[in-house]
Amino acid sequence: MTQQYPFFIRTTVILFGLMLLTAALYYLGDIIIPLAFAGMLAILLNPLCNLLISKKMSPPLAILLALLLAIVVFGCIGYFLSSQMASFSEDIPTLQKKGTSLMLQLQQSLQQGMRINLQQQNHWLSSASTKMEGMAGGAVSGLFGALSVLFLLPVYTYLLLYYKNLLLNFLYEVFANEHTSEVAMVLSQTKQAIQSFMSGLLLEALIVAALNAAALALLGVKYALLLGVIGALLNVLPYIGGIIAIALPVIIATITKDGYQTQLWVIGAYLLIQFIDNNFLVPFIVSSKVKINALVSIVIVLLGGALWGISGMFLSIPFTGIIKIIFDRVPELKPWGRLLGTEMPTKLPGWKRRKVKPKG
Image 1 (cartoon, rainbow, N blue to C red):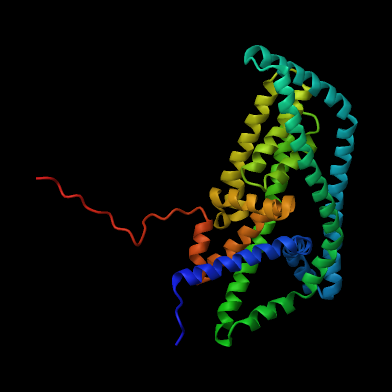
Image 2: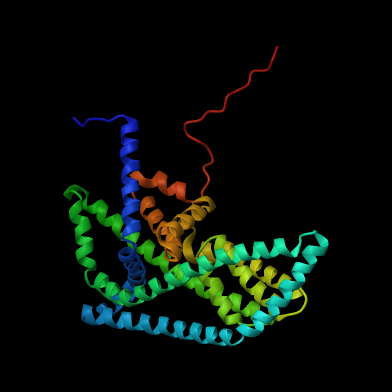
């Protein structure tokens, strides 16, 4: 007979286990982050590998060709971004001069309109610049971490694809024999759903990048392609990323153009693109079954940033989507899957509406 422990003991054990897991994830981040990105890439490349293997190609060669194709694609994207950044860096002195002029005008307006003296404003600016330097330092360290990921990513991806059957066989052997068919069904459904989800995210990012770049180019904003791609990458981060994605072209338009009409058009165009993304691209491309509610999205992005920095913020949403896919396909975990999702229950099974008797 299985012993049933009190609720507070079970809760304490679960919380303690979560604390240990969080500590392990934090201290092993340098090892887990490359593996996490490699796992996502392996999921995307798996259908191509299966196609090549079905054409009588050996698995090692099929994996190598798929990986080389991915390296070429990402290399072209990296070359494009670096060339755009080089063009942007040439204009930095001009942008700084225009930005300084606009800042002086803003300070004078604050002094005349809100009676805030220049000394107080300079104090606020120095405090803000100190914080920005700290954030820049964190971003630079995150960049070096990303470069180390790039070297490990192909190796991990190749090995994950090569030992795919070994990993799947381990999952089968972990469970009892009588549950083999259920485990096979859950794994098959989860694999297909994850592949669809990840490829949908990639396609969504490409469409959003194209829409952003086209809108900025039509409005005459400089560095339209660069800002469009950055906006699509930031779009992975819900709400927080969208605000930053809008702020960047608005700042560039403010510095490079006179007046404020272009900035208003940029905000309107990005809001329209966000509407198209949320109401058409996500439901039909990424799949509405993997939508995560706003509360969980914001919390999980902040937790990912606290745990693994910028890498954690970008990994948090895809991984939460994968976890939801698994939860939705395991009967015991379905309540947790519904908690992560956006579907609102029409009625609560344990609650009953009390009838109020009329007085008299």
